[in-house]
Length: 265
Image (cartoon, rainbow, N blue to C red):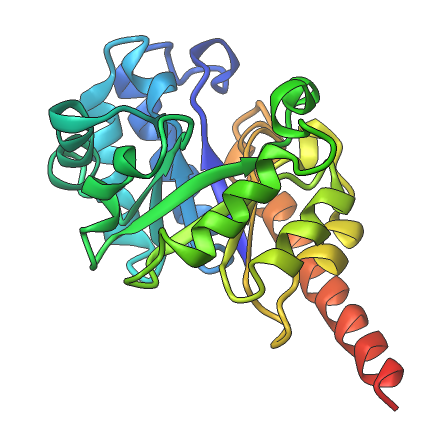
């Protein structure tokens, strides 16, 4: 269930890497190689690459995932959201230029903004539902009688998922909302950010978000893994943190499923 977020910040690269696209390439290849057997997915954040003109490093990062972790899903974190020909260009960018398996989208413009992505039956569409940032409630939790995030979850189930290639983003920092999303979308996989640096509770998120089969979660951790160490052993430190997170997820899943089993007696 572990997804490793790849959010390069040149100023935080280990000493000796160099704050350049070449340094980012070397850094990510080391991180991917160290965590390949622990992660089910990787989530490169496009802005962290494009803001510094490192699109070639993003392409190499995805190539490294294909080479070193061929089982892993590549989720391009782009949070796109537009209509018509622009949406189609964004879909081509994510799926054709970068070769991502899935891409994150903002559904604020409605279902038509999602169609060019959802129509790619062999690719995934990851829709923002209830995000993990502190200010999310200003929009996503209103109106109280029928909050926006709940409406998005219902639309995802009833209208937006004819090909079964949709996921919802539900942050670990708000387990009550995460639990409601799971109730509204019982079979839709959830991408869960907000652990590690954002302070989400792993056990509460697993308890709220597991589906009836004990699956259905992809739990993301970015900075806690990437920057676990800053010295020459940074890759080993990243692996140790990823292993800790992977094992904590396994333990939490086991405990939740055992409680559910006992409650059914």
